[in-house]
Image (cartoon, rainbow, N blue to C red; front, side, top):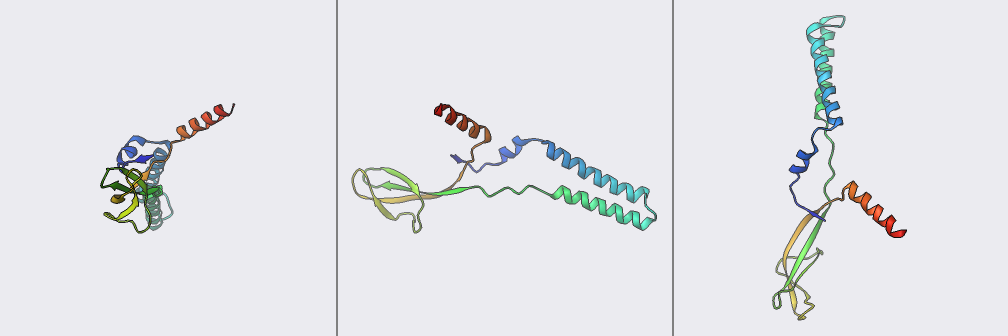
Length: 144
């Protein structure tokens, strides 16, 4: 399946998850605890309070910056061939050495050479978990 480049809608649809809410609460806790150490001083002296408070604030902001690494999308490069005589269009996988306006392959209808009109790359869409489960159920039902 082919998916378009617009990933912004997927990010907006995700919303707030339990994991992100818990992460935000931990960040707020560390920052507030650090500020309390700096202002109210729970340690033995002023310098240790400052050091501990600064350290806790640094931990909180570091946790805030941690992001999940998203894998690079799987891409497929395609070549579109068009016959100049009959107009037949053929799509195939890109091969090393293909370039636009190159005369290559023969037309199935008129046996004339076909010309490469376009070469482009598309992002392949991964099937969702529910579709995988549906496919498994269909396979199991067809076996019985």
